[in-house]
Length: 83
Image 1 (tube, rainbow, N blue to C red):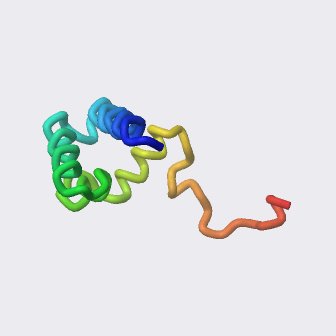
Image 2 (tube, one colour):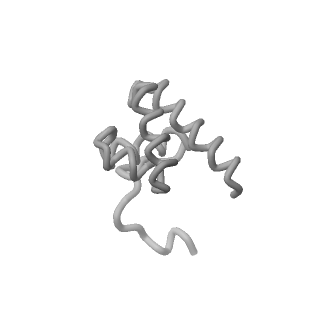
């Protein structure tokens, strides 16, 4: 994935977080700026700054991507289901 596509994806996810009232616009811009300045991934920056908890981040990302939430995925599964 090129940098432009990655940036669009990050901005779309941040807009989603704002629309879900998970982050304010100010907090989203703060996280994005800190990520760009530090070079650290924006999701790591958001949790390190205390803007969002890890579980809430995982749940939000699953909703954004329309995937099961991590709590909906069983820890153990029957491998025969995949054969």
